[in-house]
Image 1 (cartoon, one colour):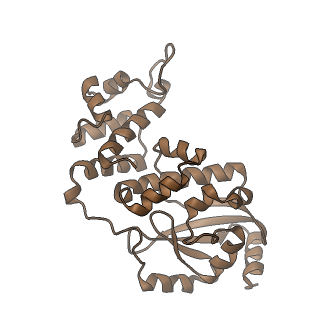
Image 2 (cartoon, helix red, strand yellow):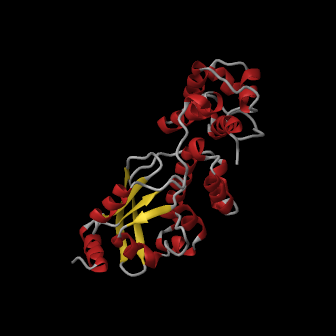
Image 3 (cartoon, rainbow, N blue to C red):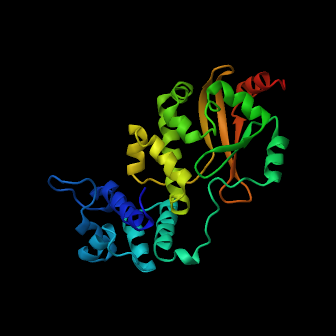
Length: 278
């Protein structure tokens, strides 16, 4: 696992290497030894010296100013989530004592949150932690998730399931599997500044790093926010389902609810039949 110090450098390099010259109004002449912008091109766009940018990308300068980070964010065309991630990496690197320590990955949720899950029945819902361990769920979620193999391992983990369980590739088509993988790895990268040194986080990355589809996404340093998504799922017992996956954050920053909701009337009827609520 990278340290906070090298994470900022690696993130800056990855954003430069993914940006094509034509995206920033530069002509692409001749063959390039590395993908993306040259270091000199980014330095010019950000108003920095090449030498200083090199120190940042090599982790030899660990205290860039806010103005430097803002100039790099603009030059690199960072998204809102990427700007937030860049700021957090920089703060963890040189202002860590000012930041509150995040709770441990394995911290138990409040009893009231578990009670909320039960009250959400018959809507399938589970509670997730920062490394996507499923720490609690209601009866409806268990009924739906069990045939899909999500609960085959203890503790169940949605990232291990997506990359290591063969069922994940059977219930989603290729495009949906790839899109879900993009989001899951992006969410995990976004959590890294807070929990990257936690043993549970390291163990998860070590477990799935051997999967090429994970390794390539992890190396790309793409970050993403947790957002609702829609997927067509081939459920082993309920058939084809158009599902909406809703995300709700609860009290503690390291726990969030995931709800599985029907996306159309046919799916609602299939939910009702499977859950015995029709």
